[in-house]
Length: 459
Ligand code: ADP
Image 1 (tube, helix red, strand yellow):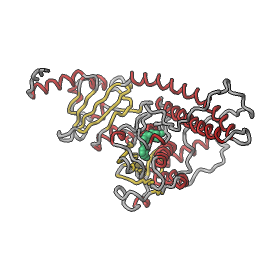
Image 2 (cartoon, protein in one colour):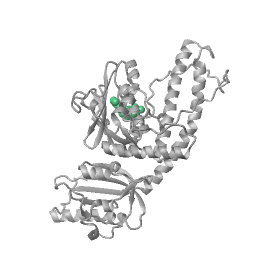
Image 3 (tube, rainbow, N blue to C red):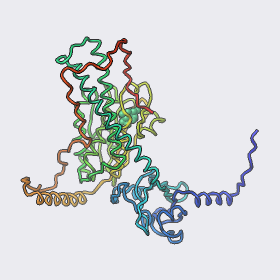
Image 4 (cartoon, rainbow, N blue to C red):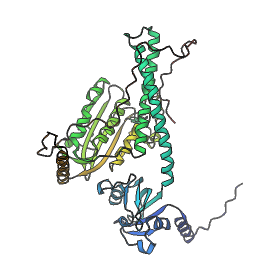
């Protein structure tokens, strides 16, 4: 049998091995005390931060060494800086991608940075970070390929869609009922494909940093309500109860948040996409007769939004994966519900681009709650930022003297009507000729059994 070599188990030996590992790994490791003062730094962190030596770093505030900006090279305000938030709150941070501004050379190094509050050691924080230049380059190539491919494939799909609608339109084609049911299934599948390509394009634009948040000061209760209101009819059609703002007695208590005025500094289009995805999922994954609740409230220095449903729920195994690209839970319920597995990935990216966090709580068969936590601003900060916005509007009007709109006199409490979602309008199908040409090869075989299961994109 296997013979185990007895390890030298003295604590001195264990400590020696741990020290060797920390010295040799390529990841930067910094340990701070509760207030962020550096207690330990390993050689990789010394090299990446260009701080010179451990002696120079120990005793400094971590913020002097770990200056971050976004992956796209934009400055991170305190509100958006997840490292700062994690360090201040003692909450973990998992692999935030940004750029480290190295001390001496001012060089930008793309990194993924994590914070772990150390267990059982006072309230130390362990910060780890690694250089992701190579990963990003590889991702960039992949993204470009997917982007080109989805772009190219959208055109034929739009053509197929156009011909299918012609075939299904009694004014342009005469078909029997059996053919109609086959073509209707084909049309459903082609719409699914079109949505998949659109989602893929959105994801690739996001991944290569082409879509950047445009921050605005906003009153969040009004914003979330305006977006949610668009779903009242959809929910009713699906025989679901839809409630804004008064549901979750555990988190909120009898609708108190309705009277709250909560300010945020967010991208309104991103907010719409996030809520669209979460509410559409709640509708999609909740059988008729169920309920959906959307709530928003202030929670200390955060704005907390939840979308809760009483639907099919998510198993513990799936819960850890649902925010990954293309992940779809595979069970008898989800198999019959179409989807691409990209919506929650988009949600996570959008939320994080605004300095927020998204997570889900669920019990299989009992419903789900998706939480979105975003930085909150005070009413004073809101007013200050509104002054900046008004000044920018004034300047823009001076640059364009032909504009006749007067400048707004006072800051609106509820955001102006939202601009449409940022996703580009789908390419309209090229107008097919009135009598479509015959397909290249007329099918001679009987039509195959149509498989209505559209969950073909699962990995
Ligand atoms: P999809 O297009 O499949 O809905 P998403 O990324 O939006 O993709 O969601 C990923 C997976 O998470 C879904 O396939 C589903 O299994 C699960 N999911 C998301 N929202 C809910 C919900 N409200 N209730 C139950 N399952 C959900």
